Length: 314
Image 1 (tube, one colour):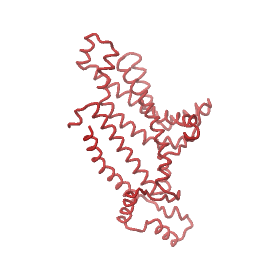
Image 2 (image 1 turned 45 degrees about the vertical axis):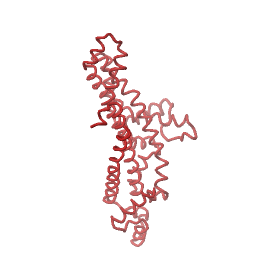
Image 3 (image 1 turned 90 degrees about the vertical axis):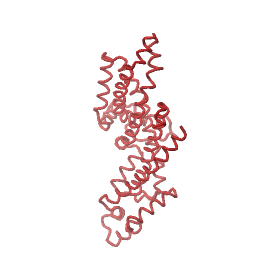
Image 4 (image 1 turned 180 degrees about the horizontal axis):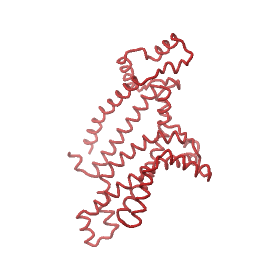
């Protein structure tokens, strides 16, 4: 297993390098001038040139790229044009918010999606199955930003139970921190709950039709033993891959939800930086996001190999 993990780590390095190269190149091609944003609409040509020189934007592309990679090797992501501070520091403050939101949503997705899918498969063609799949279809069909607004209207405006937005650091108020993440997590998770429930149901139905399941039932084993001991692990093998994709979608979907609920997360920071042409923050944010995705895929691959040892020998 250790050899397999090392192989996957090594194969991830070119992916990260390629992502950094693409993100840096795209930022150079995007229309707009960050020097003009910094200097203001009334800046003269001389002032604009001075600002471009100060930001290093007057250098050739190769020199800018080499300087950026040199900074990465020193652990320096550059300095934000608009925030006027270290990009690494700005990102480090935002990542915990995004991770907390994604992990809350991920826990909800697993806690609801897998059981709903398994119960629906075990009660196929009954009212339980139909009700579960109707709810799953409803969750898939509702846009998360619209769902977020509806949850705010219900739980914040009408019932006054939960905050409509904002973020409370856990170090200041753990209860307030928990409350501030409930509605955003629900808004982000319900779409993935529907997808995971439908995939788990179809996978479970295939497993229940296998000969070893019929043999276990013919031996007179209780249903909980057949499901818990023989079916669940085989259901989790293909579902694990979907779970990895689900977490990736939760991370990417956090951009919209952080904006709806005014959460100071990494997605909102990147979105704000795109509108203001803050290239160092965009490049640093994309790099951190790419590393998170690569690490997530690595974890999924290791889990997949643990559940199905044949994967390690392919």
